[in-house]
Each structure stands twice: as structure tokens, then as C-alpha cells.
Length: 400
Image (cartoon, rainbow, N blue to C red; front, side, top):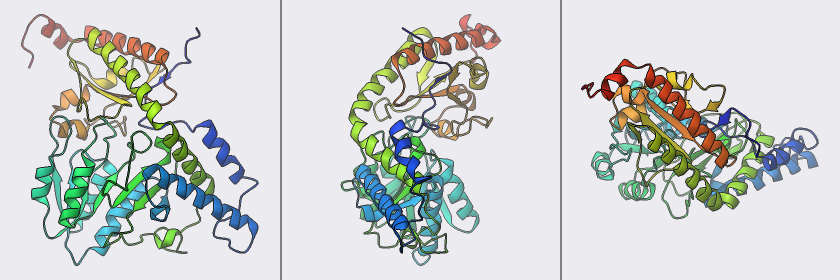
């Protein structure tokens, strides 16, 4: 049996490769079928427009939504900015109170912080040690002047899945729109917007084997107060986002959505087994290691490991040419600061800096998991061998 090519890639929560079928669907739209979908007077434009609507339907099918509720964007960061800033603009007569969660992605936290500096009031709710939001705390925080609640479906660093249906029902009972970052959830677990009351939801193609630079925003047509348009100049996407549409990228997003819907359940079972095997190998071989995040309410594609008495960047520097995983702040591993997600879950800065995100994808094989586990174990053991604190701990000396 031939060994997989190194480095082994286990950073699929950062980005995924474009599926071969997706790439094939995109290629004609770069060359032969290059028309602008806004060109209504000839066949090139008609064909491009038809491709856009097919892709819109494919995204809607993945989310169990009406295709008329789908707006194409450049990705989740733009989509969330459109939703948050757009709702802030149209909700002035209701109030200026915004609720979000301490473990959200910076696409949300930085945007609401910017609004906070402009005079909006911000409530950032904590999560428990498993990364879960207390819905009763949310209920007690909603006020008459609350204009939106922002909760991500599944965390990008830990994979922790929030109780979105319960949160959505609570928000709707209070008459407050729920905005959901589903970047990591879409294409990995079932999202049924016909059954789960979410008002706005953002996804990105490159997290589910589509191209970078394209995403979609679901806007519930029954919303009483919809977000204002922030990009003007042509009225594209029903006025929400003006500008010539990225036809190849949108076709790729549609194709990726169709593939993920088709293979969702089979991939869940296989990747869960691989993830659990990786965790079991690490937990058996290494002392003082634990999993960050809820044991059950967690994506099957990710393992966030807390390894005591090591620094994650020092460990990963030992195998950068052999294994690709995330350390530190998983969305930007170059950031030396400890992960705000793990700090929100109650980890100390040292524990957060000793944590690693290992994320699996559709191409991941058993052989890769076995190689990755061996590389990881050897690197941690080598790093600990040079740690005086680890040696003191092994001698029974209190190092807390």
C-alpha cells in the first residue's frame, strides 16, 4: 500500500479543495459561456442568467429554502456584514440593542464592535464550558429595543453546534430576527430552514468544496424588517447587492451545494469514525490531553484538543512540512493571541495556547489519520521532553 503524499492536510475547516465535478461545472463559464447575466438582449446573457438561477435553486435545496430567498455574495464575511449593518440601518425606529455570543467568528464580533462604537448597545452572552449558549440567558437578555440576535450554527474552532431551533423559536416569540453564521455547518449537517426559524443565514462555497470568493445569504421572505442594501449601482440580486455577478463562482457554489446534499449522510458516518479514531489514538498515547467542546453537540469533522504543558505553535513548528493543522487562533494561526473561543469556554490563556484544531474533510483517509496521529504524538512528546514544567509535573511537583 502506497503512503499518502505529505504533508497530510487536516485543516478542512480553514478551506477545502474544489471538487473535480465542481471545477468541471465552472470551466465553460470562464471561456465559451462568458456572458453577463444582466445582458437581457441576447443568448449569451440569457444562458448566464439561467445558470445563475439553477445555482440559486441548488443552494436553496441544500438549505430547504425558497430559491427567491437566496442572495449571492462573495462569502460569509460579506454576507454577515450585509445582514448586520443592513438591519442596523433599517431598525432605527425599533432600537439599537444587539445580542451576540462571545464565541462568534470575528466576522460578527468585529462588525458589532464597529456598530457599538457608533452608538449601538451590545450584549455579548457567555457560553458554558462546552461552548453552548444558555437559551434562558438569551431569553432574559432580549428587550423591546433589541433589533437582532446573532448566533452561529456550528463553531469554526470547536465544531460545537448550538441549539438553533430552540434559539430561533425564542427569537420569533420575542419578535426579534435571528441572524446565523452557518459557514461551517452548511454541507456538513442538515439545515432545514423550512422547519428551523432563522431569518438570515450566511454560507461560503470554499468551506464545502466550492471556489473561494463566493457565498450566499438567505433572507427569510417573511421578515417584517429586512436589511437595507449596502452596495448600490445596478440593482442586482433584487437590490441587495449591486454588481456584475461572478457566474463561474456561483455555478461552482451551486454544484458544490448539490454534491453536499447528495453525499451528506454517507460522509457524516465515515468522517465521524475517522475523527473518533484520531481522538482515541491521541488520548491513549498522551497524558493530560482532552477535547475542547461538547462531546455530543459537535461537528463530526473537527477535533479541538487541549494538550497541557506545550505551546501549540512550538509543536506545529516541528511538523509543518509533514502535517497541516491549525494552532492558536484557528481562523488566523499567525495570530499569537489565545483563541477567544476557548477563552470564552473557560480555558486559561496557557490552555488555549496549548490547543490544536484538527479538521477532516471528504478526501481524508484512514491512512492519513494514522500518519497524522503518529506525527502529532511524536511532536508533543519531543516538545514535552524539553519542558522543565513537564518534568516537574511528572515528578509529582505541583505546577498549577
